[in-house]
Image (cartoon, rainbow, N blue to C red; front, side):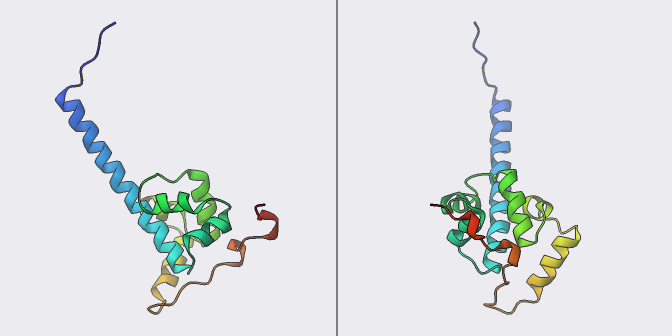
Length: 127
């Protein structure tokens, strides 16, 4: 068996990718936080609506973890944004344009009303 040596070039490339991944995670986290805050809810309320933990959403918002696709699909469906907006910051679909339009109409301190479909239903209560 031979040990492979890591070249300086490989180490530099890996470090650059790590920095890019960190930036992407933080950008995604900021967009998640923006949508949540504009909906006027806390991380705890968000976790209750989606049936997850507050810690999970905190780590997403802080850029510590990359959101899993299934959680983000549900988040986007509940709050009227698209995956393109959350993951890439692109306002390219009707859904995202409507959300951005609503964001632009808010007065300072005003929050969005949570769409009825986003409210937690009684059958999702945890025991």
